[in-house]
Image (cartoon, rainbow, N blue to C red; front, side):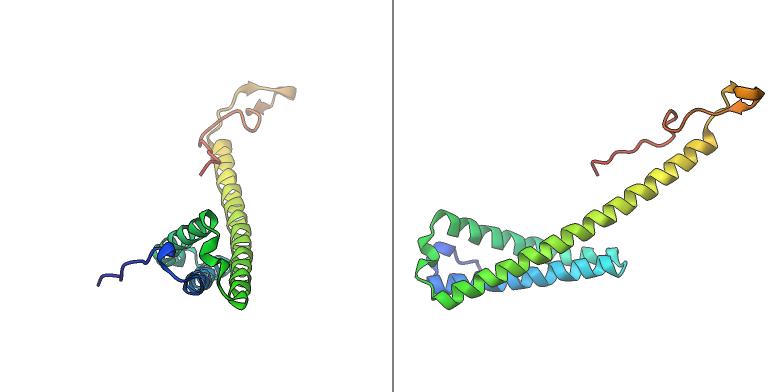
Length: 155
């Protein structure tokens, strides 16, 4: 099943272009909200189901916004109420993206803390005994001196 060809923003009437961007914004907002909901309800694997559509919509949105940014006249003659509706839709998308970013940040932080705890536990278990310390007790290396698991926060 092939999708119909995408009409360039420059080939559309201002009102039609605004309507298209509103539709894309609303669909993208819905996907971002569902993704955030999956994170909140601890169903991160369901997020993968949304990615193909999310990427497609994000690309379409970006193309239209870039075209409008380069040529403001593309929407200058659109009815004021449609432009107001577009601004509202873009505001809702921005709010949904902010909530999503916060949720993803929290999930990443939790994941990093769990991984760090596991690495520290492995370190403690595998850390060699260094010899006699104070009061003739066997001593272990200080935390962070032994790297049983390498941590990389760039993920």
